Length: 261
Image (tube, rainbow, N blue to C red; front, side, top):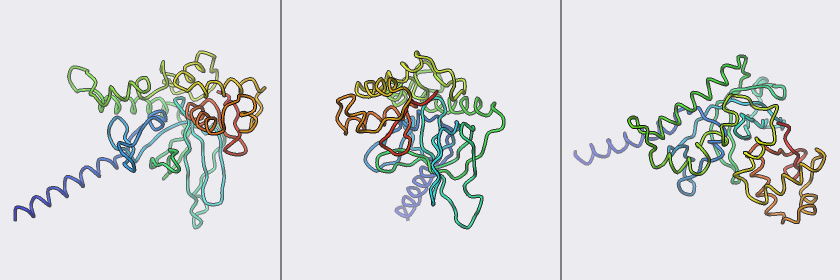
């Protein structure tokens, strides 16, 4: 009898924990980029809390239409991430059509594939009122602070401190770039330096090379010849720059160009 009760309690607690992990979380893209697995094959954790279901807002920077899915590159001013919407062959409108630079809201599941994070979208819709972008950033900030600060005293919990040490306040690019909700336009050299700050030496060298290429896209082999950096290191550094929203892939995954912010 006691064992049965204990088993029921354990299942109940596990179910509650799983339910909490599936709660919808408003989030910035930088938080998604920075989140890590507590251990191999564990769920990704944001602010120390396992997170799967997320909602984010941002601008569509590129669209890659394929037979079974559409991949949107979404930029919210704190970073860029791929959002995949799978196409239902039985529903003609399962993959909505959006113009480039449209602001959208995404509801989906955070996942990784081949070591890269992306969001598998359940639903994507266009944002008609820009106030929704500002509201989302405020909501994401509120949830972040609720999870990383003690209710009284305003002290950071240990997990919150660890997250902040890795990347500013853990939510936004240093100095709050994008905090006002703008996804692009008018980026100056100061903003670029802020985004390059957390990047490796190789990433900085590759960005300078691409910036001096008169806006032309450069293939992996061209970058290797122009910088003297190994192919393996270039691929790793390019991922850093893509995640910081500084460059984007063009005709394939090994050709990059400077993102016009």
